[in-house]
Image (cartoon, rainbow, N blue to C red; front, side):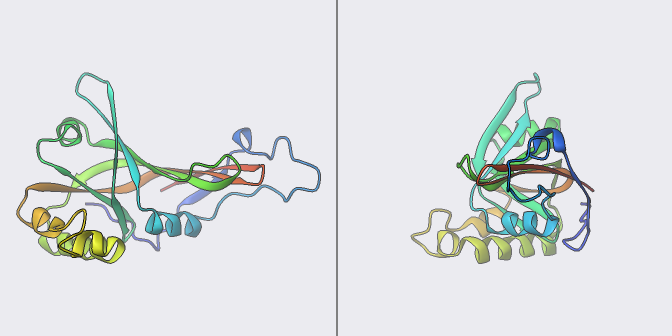
Length: 185
């Protein structure tokens, strides 16, 4: 699996067509591209993501899930018989999104790439540790929503995929100032 690593700096571009840069408000701050470090921070902290995959007949499939950002790759899992697993077996291209639900503040992120199955046992243990650190009692407590997830990953009942970004987009909103950033890897 390609792992660009969190130290990898993509090229960053502000797309003025979809930013307030074309129609700035009087007295508003200059619209700038979002720094990749801010996007990474949000990827590390976001609890819910949406994955978009493509069915063999071309129809889209979108579903929420939990995911972790580790060493420059976004990891998620799915049951072996689930629709997203079947879709990814046919075509690994996908997008993961996360963000807020506010019109005036926040940063929405879209990560585009190719989902690659995690086969290396050492990497799998790193991903399990990242899930446990991020989601805590949801995974580690017997009462947790996803308790036993690590063992499910280890015994192959769930597939773990990593998506190294190829392209990512950030849609920022700050009190009526909008930015659209594109990161290319």
